[in-house]
Image (cartoon, rainbow, N blue to C red):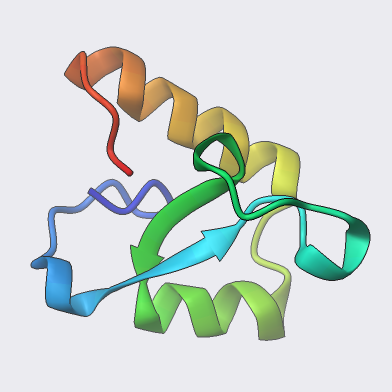
Length: 71
């Protein structure tokens, strides 16, 4: 499930995204990563479609509603 649009995708369509960017000190750890589609990943970086905090909130809501980690 991509937390940006809430849709289910095949894993081959997904990429890992740092919630807090690596350049800003974000570590490549589970709590700072989220799987999003390649298309939304590109849009996220070029369009600033939502803040990192918004993405983290959506990620955590998906984890809570599904009862398992999505990454």
